[in-house]
Image (tube, helix red, strand yellow):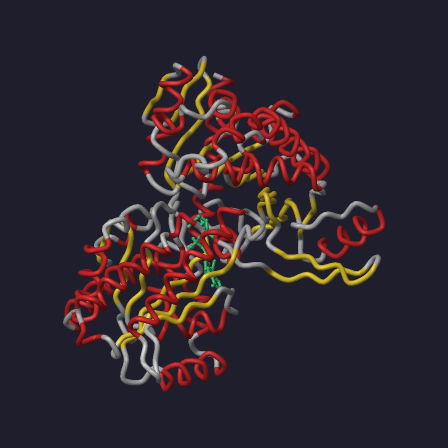
Length: 489
Ligand code: ADQ
């Protein structure tokens, strides 16, 4: 924390997110095994050093008994994590219901799931009440661990009600809230029945952050149009109190990826993969299996490319690695079947006895295998229909030291704002455009590849996760200090 002048005196930071960065598995009555879990926020905060940070969140398991809760709390303490225990009913209503069925699709411009539109409307109130109850449970755990001067950093759409709970408890708490998804246009946001209550709660924070300037602008417009408040270049003003609103684009710990490429295990993977795909160009997709990631659209675009460029049929392969998420939700189950069906059809159509054009894996890869894949592939295809930022695009660039692979990137990912000059930008809904971009990427001159890569590499290595977190926390401290000064004057 150079800029904070806090070297030697660590800033205490309470990071509050829906999920802790670990998966917990019960091995006995009072035995737990813990494993660090994949995900955007986890990857970003792993890169932050020099703060005394603790995580508060749900461990992702139902632990109804006190013996289990005490044992899990002890095990998590070693990883600097503090659990919030949520029972099955609240998880169903708050997490599956309000967060994943209502806020997630709405914030990504997907609307509500078609067939349960009416059911969702009917259940709305009970799910919103559960959401508020759950946020209050997170707040209760924060109160237990809070010390004066701590910075409390609330994350994401799961915890929009938390800033209000915290400030109602103690107005002097330093509270920041950051959204990892897009904040949609106010025309979309205003359809949400609980729109005003959520906005008012978020405005209780001292600092509100988004990945891009556009998301921040949408949020300020929502506050002016829905609440009638005044938007200023600094943020939103309500009766003399200013909530600072700004863009803080996230990054990755690029050094961690660069170091990994030097490890013998990763080098072994790279050699194996290079031999395995010798003579073929390799394209890569790495996504959570979520509708926002545009996986069916990406695969259809690849099919169109094969259809129109027969000379490439046995010279290119698409590796699509998709981590299953929210597997108990029917919409996601349908998406999985749809992807399998399209992949099967294309492999049947274009495959030969010895090779298939698409390798699709429904699973997570370990960090070493992922780095090796990023390093050996010629093209990365990131075709999200909407994405707050998209860290996969950053990770790919960080691992492309020598190959200078091409990034094809959706214009609807926040990353398009930072990597747009080096990537080929596409509208993921237009499969003809994506198919043409695949051809462009595969046939691009080495000079053009080098130039594009240089731009993106410079960005990814100088705008890191650590910078992101430092800037946010620094800005939060300054915002609070300025507000205190104004009150004294
Ligand atoms: P996510 O939607 O999870 O994050 P993303 O930013 O791409 O999306 O991060 C995914 C992370 O999971 C990456 O670090 C990636 O390496 C890892 N991952 C993905 N698939 C994997 C696989 N098959 N095997 C192993 N690891 C895998 C949310 C928002 C994003 C935003 C981030 C951070 O939706 O828009 O960029 O938070 O703010």
